[in-house]
Amino acid sequence: MRLIDWLKPGIKLKRWILYAILGILFIAFGLNELVQHKVYNTPYMVFFIFLNITGIFIIYVSVTEGIKAVIALMNKGYIKVSFDNEKIENLIYEKRLLVKGPKIVVIGGGTGLSTMLRGLKYYTSNITAIVTVADDGGGSGDLREDLGILPPGDIRNCILSLADTEPLMEDLLQYRFKDGRLKNQSFGNLFLAAMDGISDNFEDAVQKMSSVLAVTGKVLPVTLENMKLKAELADGQIIEGESMIPEIAYESKTRIKKLSIIPEDAKPLDDAIDAIREADAIVLGPGSLYTSVIPNMLVKEITNSVRKSKAFKIYVSNIMTQPGETDGFKVSDHIKILNDYCGKEIVDCVIANVDNISDELKKRYMEDGSEIVDIDLPELQRMGIEVVKANLVNINKGLVRHNSERLAEVIMQTVMEKKLLYDRKKILEYMYLSQRLKEK
Image: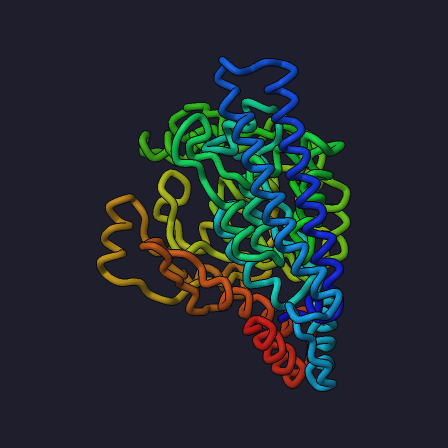
């Protein structure tokens, strides 16, 4: 059990009160549309009924968990707090460990970024995730088109990765509807869309959702502008839309020649620039090179700030190549593309996987046009890039992913040794205590 549960159960109560208020808002809005605007025989009826049912469910969970929090506050048995001096001292020390951890800025999007964040939160609470908002596919793309909001999918995943929330709530927010007009839509996306509706802007909505879910660190959209990706392929084709670029490039058997954003002068969030300026380390990736990492760097002030920063700059290489984006790429090719868009010396170090996968899995990936990214060490050394090798593979449901815990451990060791210059005894102590925190 974490320190916050031992010493401040009232914070949990506050969180469930906020959930209950959200449930009431869902019900009020749904009933208002059903009763006053009489949408009984329209396609929207199903949606507003769904809002009412969702609101009731949220209130039920909130009341149940809120009662437990009250009981904890009264110290009558739900949480039996043991005032063992040694235990409390260890918990306090572990909390201080996170607060004093290095300031890490991670830049990217997609599954790779959220996977990495899930491990990093056990080492430091000073995390800022700067997330692309160029996504226009899937449920995020539908909400973007229907409601005119920025795509919530990548941001939702990052928030959940950094959240201190109960498994039931995480399962609820990740739930995708299987039928009807909401088919394939994530409840978490709808949650963030609703939060956007009662907030001043999308940034405010993200921060409110982060507060409700007790997020470690901060999640920021790279810009609040309606950013879109545009690509020119080597065969001259011009493509607009993040979801279409790799698909058409792969079908055309051609490479991406030039990537740009619309609008070209998109403004980043001030908090993002401040975080980069104060960072001890900046981590690019993992994630799709052209559609997750580079879009953030095409926001000019982001690239300029990263280049000027004195932070230690790390690129986490993908384990597998991505069809339509990085076909045949080696690790050095990823760095060269980053240099083309961001200027030289944008990366100090590469973290790359040396773990292997089964021949059967390799064959399956090759059938889809993907292969393991090769570490071409001589070329990387010629470029002056330091390489940190590690076993990073995690097979999840037949898919090759980064091992979030191992990747976070390697990042923290690298940052502390290269940037913060901790002595080895302090590094070992820090890693040991962080491991204990993960086990709680």
